[in-house]
Image 1: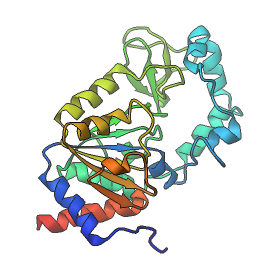
Image 2 (image 1 turned 180 degrees about the vertical axis):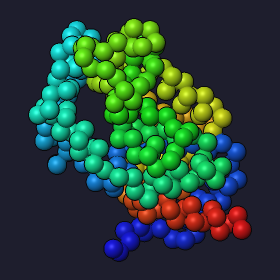
Image 3 (image 1 turned 90 degrees about the vertical axis):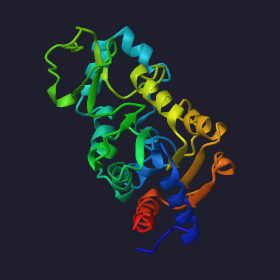
Image 4 (image 1 turned 135 degrees about the horizontal axis):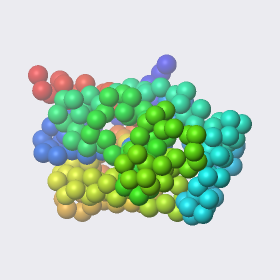
Length: 262
């Protein structure tokens, strides 16, 4: 398959040099890297919500009013939730996911924030990971934030109760109207205080609060590196903008770092 990247080797090398000279590197990924694994976007032509219906904007409030009913709808084998999550579950990590995991294992990347709920970064081997919108394979207590693998949560009683505090369990994926879990936000804010170099990949970085993290780093004089198919609102602020899919650009960036380290 022909490459779709349009970067000069000098751009890749410059980004690699900036990463090597940084003390604390963070990254933010979004829907673009998931699309490269065959997961349709949620909105737009062919999107999952376009096809199966968009969740209500007050979804969290609806859950709180009747958690039992919300769980029954989630578990309906012919319902839209089951179809959507089966589609997500069929995807595999792509070279972009593995490149981020390799950057972590090389000691370059200290924290990866993802807006995606598809579990692909974790499957690729990323450990210092903040899934700011949750993970579709996990169940979370809305009272104490404890998380459990979905396969380990007994569902004979709905809604299920948290083994730690007997609070109400729901999907870890953040619903419309639901606050970002405080432990995830705390990890993001504490990381950005240390960060001096930020990679933004596969996202236009316009959805808050995620969009605020690279901006906070840039505003204190940090380095921004963008990996995206198209220009974004962030592009004018970036020190290096690399055009192309993450699955192509990120492995090139890892290879350049290895070459510079030799």
